[in-house]
Amino acid sequence: MVGSAIGLLLLAAAIWLVVSRSGELAQAWAALKEPRPQWIVLLIVGIVGAVSTSALAQSLMLRRMSGVWVPLGEMSGLVTVSTLLNTLPLWPGALGRIGYHRVVHGIPPMRAGIAIVSVRLVGSLTGLLLLAMAWALGGSTALVCVAWASVLVGFGLVSIAQSTRLASAAAGAMWFDLGWAGLRYVAAFELLGLHIDVGTAGALAGTASLASSVPFVGGAPGLREWAVGWMTSRMEVLPDALALGLLADLLVRAATIVVLMPIGILMGRGLSRRLRAAVEALGPGQS
Image 1 (cartoon, one colour):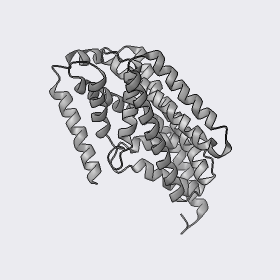
Image 2 (cartoon, helix red, strand yellow):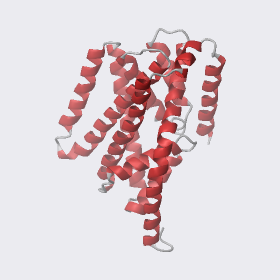
Image 3 (cartoon, rainbow, N blue to C red):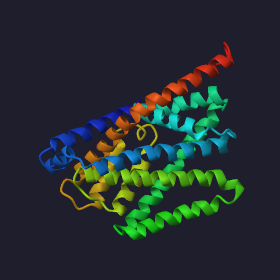
Image 4 (cartoon, rainbow, N blue to C red):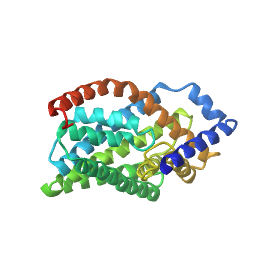
């Protein structure tokens, strides 16, 4: 409860700062009022693409922890719905997913929980790696892209061994997930009339992943906005870089909700039917 309250206070503070700097951010607001379609499309692609890679990582890690393979379509629906729910305090999306796996797939809550935490831990480590790479290589697009591809090849080589196949494949999926996050920040800044290089996009993606993994605070809105804003001020020489970073992440947050809401409603109906059928199959007193 305390962590959730802190997150909400941070979110309110981020919105207050952006609103209070409306004069300094006039050009960004003006650009946002006349968005270019290609950047809207890129932002949507980054949001939807992240659902698929996150679903793949969750299915792979759940298979490793429980031996049960959840189809990617079903897991994509769970990730979509839980992403929306996790914008609320106390991570209700993650808790709901654990309960769903118990009832529908018979997976013990502890194993499902460990799988979810493991994916988040892998996301933190890969985010830290990408942040270090982007910080070290700076704005060199070629070097950052080569380094990103090299890490992906490394995950592929590790997955050759059967004992590490599922875990390394999950890490590779989360590495792709960071690529989608980088695309989202490129699109968000372009919609604000600003250009960021690949190094900055990678640093922001890594920072967002780390901030989102902070227990009891990172999952809900608040901490990620400030982390992205601070990293923007470190990576880019811009007037009011902190406020621009906050605005860009708020834009990504709002776009994620808008894009995933109709998808979540549609997929949530199918998940609800399957959950009801599983409860009825269990019978009274067993659900």
